[in-house]
Length: 200
Image (tube, rainbow, N blue to C red; front, side, top):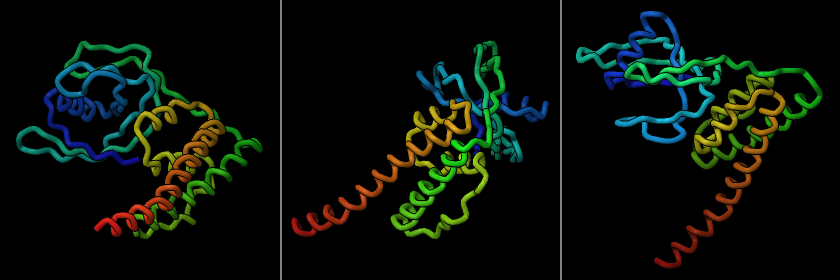
């Protein structure tokens, strides 16, 4: 998915300018422990490359960049020889097949994502067309992971899955839970509003 970034720290200016000069992507990883600014952080070992697609340079050296997430990678070794964190990584492929299990999981996930979007659209009063979901399993899986409004740790678990069938299955489980939570929130919401009015 697209990821716009404001690059202002000196170490990241150095990193991004090097990536631009070499026409290389950089890695985006979720912090597992520590802090990102003002200290050392330990990242999760699976991340995603970010391809820089546009750059806006400011006079003071800051940059606004637009990136697009591309490929997953596994970190094998971390290097702290530069102001920014580096690593030895291996690119990860996603095991894909056209088995009956994959087809079934795709069908289930499409129904769950559609229900999720319909509920979000109704609650937020926004115009979302849930009927235009991808038919292709991988595209549906990627879109489904983008749409999920869940904690980053849950998405990190999804990112680490290496089988498309398992990815579809696990995402279906998450959507099942999220749809149930949304339904309960909608059920309880009107009751809470009614109680509030009675107390006033």
